[in-house]
Length: 148
Image 1 (cartoon, helix red, strand yellow):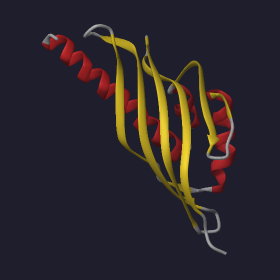
Image 2: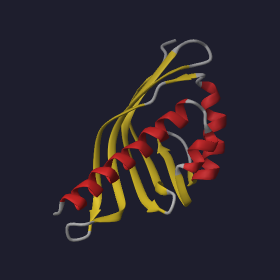
Image 3: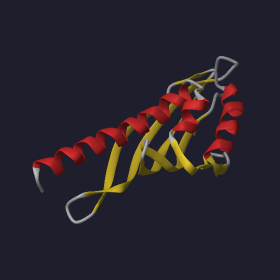
C-alpha cells in the first residue's frame, strides 16, 4: 500500500469511530434529530436483542424517544471496537462493519440504577455526506435490575 492509501484508511477508521461515538452521544443526550442524521436513507436499527423493536431508524428513533424517558440519566459506553473496512485489493471500499461491546448504566425515574451490557453490530456506508449507519443491531448479554 502507498502512504496515501494508508492515510485514507486511517482517516476512514477515525470517521467510522466518530459515527459510533456520535451514536452513543445521541442516545444518551436524547438528540433524536442527531440520531436520525447518523443513518443512511433506509437505515435500520434492531433493538429486539434487548427487548425492543426493529425497523427503519426514523421510526425506531420515535420509539427510543418514548422509551428512554424512563431513564432520565444514561451514560452509554461503547468499547472494544473492532472496525473492518471493506478491502478492494489494498484500497479502502465504501462499507465498514464494527463490532463493539457496550455497558449502559442508567438511572430510572425512581432513582434506582439499571445497568446492562452486550455487543453492537454496526454496518456503515460511505455516502456523499460521509460515513453513515446502514444498520445497528443490539445483542444484550446481561442486565442488572433494581432489587425490590
